[in-house]
Image (cartoon, rainbow, N blue to C red; front, side, top):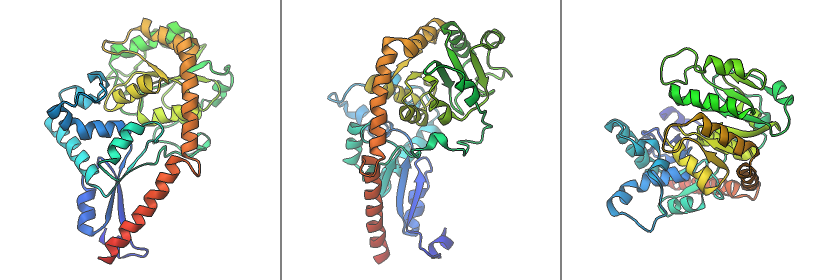
Length: 352
């Protein structure tokens, strides 16, 4: 780091992801401006930041949030070391000189306004480029299957895309109920599923009967180019774990969601999708998921009145994202303001 400081051009700031808990200490030690990059929704950060105050003081005028809509590490008992890491991450975030967030003002105006009263905060999302769906660069290290030919053979809006992300685990019982619910719904589908998705060590995650019964109208792949799939005209819905990037990509592609959160902030993301923006439907809820519920909610999303309304709402949010990323949009203007403020801050530090 010291070698970089002596190089030309000079290093004047350090930008790091929030859950690296050392950057602000390093930046102060080296006289650099510290920028924390929060990759999740602003709502999640404001919940974490204000949680101790809410517990201690009970701000009854705040809009209510159900316990099941909180992040999983606030719903259940977790090891003390995890709580310490979370607390330290939030402390480091709010202690940075500037805070960047992968969100859009038009999506989370209230949460962003609350954070801006506490910190110099810039909503600069979403961070993927406008032509992201046409990118040939792999989005991760998993081997990606090309599903475009199969998708081309299906009618517009007729295919349900299913993916639960790259690290979360699902119980065998829930996965089987979801699989049979998909089968009972009789929709076309493409399911990107990791072999290690089960919380147990079984080699084949999906039931044999499901695999035998779905071959005419569905394909199962270990991984795929999610952005390319979501942007395909044949896709009419997305059964998702509600990871933040998946939510943003769905909005960008105007694909309504069927929400099955598994861990972390995904439960809060579900609240945003289902309750606040009304662009999706939840499954599971307070109890274990059932095949009957899965089947009925797939049918509602893909061809029912609720799905039609969700499609209408998500098209409006897509317009908001496009506007935010335009030359005079909120995200572009916030990023320009960040660069201007960063230059001023860096000049002040150099003059000391």
